[in-house]
Image (tube, one colour):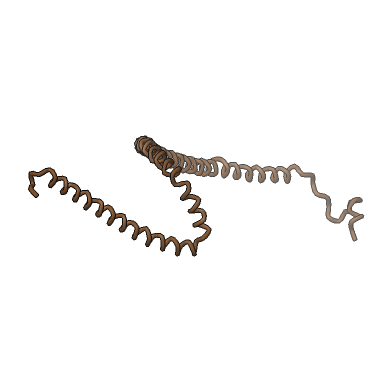
Length: 186
């Protein structure tokens, strides 16, 4: 056969096609072997997990419907992926805004705490000053008003007793008795 002869090329193409069929058959046999191994494994699992296998058989009947639904779900996942990426973007923007707000609130809380500390110190100083002034005023009133008033009251009490002694009637003699006193003598 000559390489310029079309029949030669027809034989070559036919041989290539035959070789392809052989390769496909080999692949099918390999797949059959793998499927057979998988089937044996499934049979062993079926013995152990019979209720689940029963449900799997029902699911196998619905595999075509599931495949269609799988494609629909994949499409929905693609749409959801877009929505989730948008939501993630919005969430990151929101998180950044929240961080800024929290930073602002933290600064405000720090300023408020500092101001509150200053006010507490100011009130404490005012209380200390007021206490000191009350103590000073109390001491002043004690020394300048109450002590002289006590001394004056003592002097006046002494003057009153002295006047009572001077103005009092003359005492009766010791040997005379009064009518009222007779009742009490024993």
